[in-house]
Amino acid sequence: MSENNTAIAGTLYGVSVGPGDPELMTVKAVRVIREADIVAMPDAGRGIGAAQAIAAAHLEGKEILPCPMPMTRDAAIIKETHRAVADTLCKLLDQGKSVAYLCLGDVSIYSSYGYLHQLVRDRGYHTEVIPGVTSVSAAAACLGTILCEGDDRLVIAPFGDDATAELADGHTSFAFLKPRQADGDPRAWLAKHGLLDNARMVTKCGHADEQVVPSLADTQGEIGYLSVILTR
Image (cartoon, rainbow, N blue to C red; front, side, top):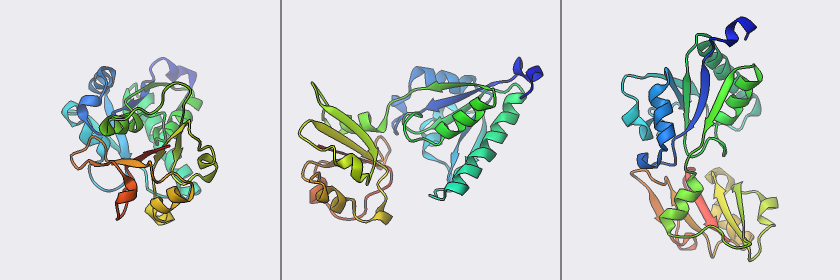
């Protein structure tokens, strides 16, 4: 971005829309979405995404920008995808447009926006993060449990992190995100680390097809990617 464009460039907002229940969107998130010129969101190529569905009531008349975000672990593809999306966003900012990029949960926790935020910011554009309700806190509410109190530690980690699991003791609570069935049955991994007996889970928290599992050890079948596993 040239110095001549600095004064007229728009702002990129990373907007957290919460885990699924539209009522868990913050007042600020709703305002930013309504005031934005363009609403962008990750697109995995499966039709209307979860973030768009959550914010649907506030999108009437809005220009929607789907941003391709293929579900892959290929680092090269991910890097190129983020660069291409950042290019698109910067072109809009150069036109003085404000862009609200929607993400599930809170944008600061394992979201696609984090990479875009840094790329766009490094190019000299103004960015702002709008925090939101996390899937972890929402899952705890669904289960009617307290995540931590007193001197307890709370560890939030991608599922299957052996190094993280080694932290397990009587004063550590875990919130595991993004379990991948391709890596094997998550129950086996939890059992290996002595974490299965106390494991509980919420899948698609706040969505119409939400599933609450008070005891993961007593279940069978596949575990969805949009699941939060709480244990200690």
